[in-house]
Structure formats: structure tokens, C-alpha cells
Length: 156
Image (cartoon, rainbow, N blue to C red; front, top):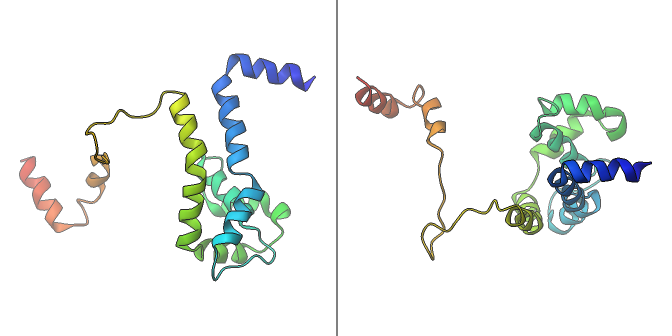
């Protein structure tokens, strides 16, 4: 029965099936916990696994829940630790752990981007080019005086 359902999704939306499979493999709890154990120097695992924290954050990042608190409420029974324990672990995530997760998950995810043709063309050969979205600056002009005067001069 599940094979027929899976085949239907595979035929109608192969990219979503492929992305889900890759995401489940790349962000598997065993992988995330291994990366944490290998790279954490001051944090430790007592009752809250790092993979549980990543799962909570993924619920927020993907827009399933509007905040960590809402995600925690939805998963409180499964996680079985206090809200304070969640926030303490989240606030104490070491830079080394974060960079290792990005580094180790980037390779398989980059292969998916290349497969679907999402890789940006190289603009300048031999240089790393980063494109900044100027939309973020419009929100800062009310806080930074120098930007207020520039904005006022640009739009009389």
C-alpha cells in the first residue's frame, strides 16, 4: 500500500521526494549527534540530545512553528526536558559545532543544488562573489543617523 502512495508522489513531485530523502539522510539524528560529540569542547549531552535541538530549530526555520517556544510546546513530551534546558543548550552552542554542521552538511546539499540546476554561474573567474540584498538596509535607516541623512538626500 505504501509503495503505491510513494510511487504517486515520486511521479507527481520527484523533487520534493528527493529533497525529503536527502534532508532525512543529511540531518539524521545520528549524524548530528556525532558532529556535536566530535566538535563540542565545553557543551555536553546529559538528557537533551543536540539532534533534538536541531529538530526544534528546523521546525522554526521551516515555518512550521513561529518560535522555539512554540516548537518546544509541540514536542515537550517527546523531548522530556525543561524549557530552560532547551534554551540553555541553544544559547551555549559553540561556534565550532555550528561551523562543523554547516561544513559537513554542505557537500551533499550542494550536490542537490547542482543536480536541479540551481548553481549560480561564475561571474568573475577566480573570485568568490557574494551578492548582498539591499532590502535589509532599508530597515536600518531609522536607527542609524548616517543612513537617515543619506536616505533623506537621495529622496528629497
